[in-house]
Length: 164
Ligand code: RP5
Image (tube, rainbow, N blue to C red; front, side):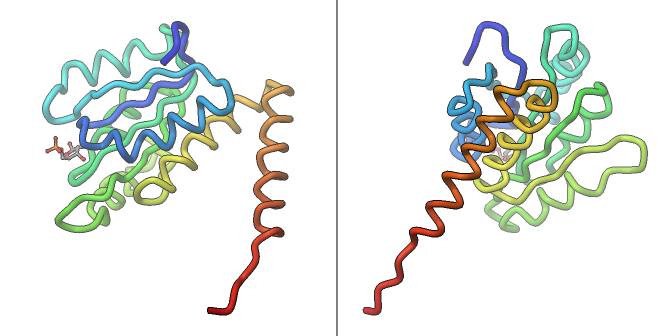
């Protein structure tokens, strides 16, 4: 967590944190200032409205919103701010996150939410996408993204398969 966050990571419950931490770890790795908070569309609707309403004035540039089940948080936040909202479907117990995914992805025309994969991979990719958005006008961050990709490519090239 940072004093002057430019990325806000919010989630419907602290039970989403094990998943959403993947986004936080990416931001930490890239040295991007972020905050992480529990803000629930259903349980704290007034806080959600206030958070979305004040986000741009507080200096946030991107919001990553994760939720499970009837995952209305990303869409409702996007309804109250024109900042880019990156939605992460958290894997629910009952329907393995398919409900979360469909709740987040099927936004009506005019209120976009960028929707990521279900679970940790989606959270990590939302973190990387936030970095990519910030790197549009930050050459140093763009260089770090290039380095990240190059290291990832090298790791895959180095993969060995042992016959058991
Ligand atoms: C959603 O309900 C949260 O985003 C969470 O994924 C799900 C379950 O919340 P808890 O019952 O674990 O607090 O609002």
